[in-house]
Image 1 (tube, one colour):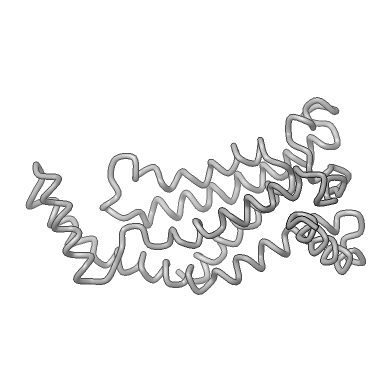
Image 2 (cartoon, one colour):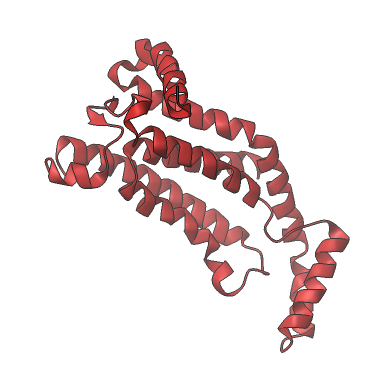
Length: 221
């Protein structure tokens, strides 16, 4: 028995437990429940990351002073910033670990809904197969067809949550993040592009984890 078959059976068992509440969309609900379980397990790391972000925000005046003293010497600026972080035990990239740890989970979910041996390809959300992609919906009724509307609703949720995340991240952005790093708050919008090309189940994962992140940060702020 392959790993995907085993994981597919476990997800199917969870879906069976949720069927009385969600009916034919129980597998979609199981995907959301699993996503929340992963995020709950990563919550201690998220809390540590948010504490690190607050510590970095408190260092903003000292960071600005370093930049003022060495405006034409980026290498010296960087060395001074490294010393500052070493002294205070902070990191400019605090909070990235929970995101990185989710990548394997996302890849496994992607495989579950693209490989037949998982036994999940025919499971659906409101009649739309969880293994289908937006391009399939476009060729089967168009963007306003029954499948297209499910994807549009998913995109709307991701877009709304990504906007909230971007606004909060832009306000809290570290003054150290310059150049391409200043674009980090925009990464949440990349989930829209990803959701448009991955199976619907993977899009559900993205929507759920983004919503969790925004809620978690709001509660811990």
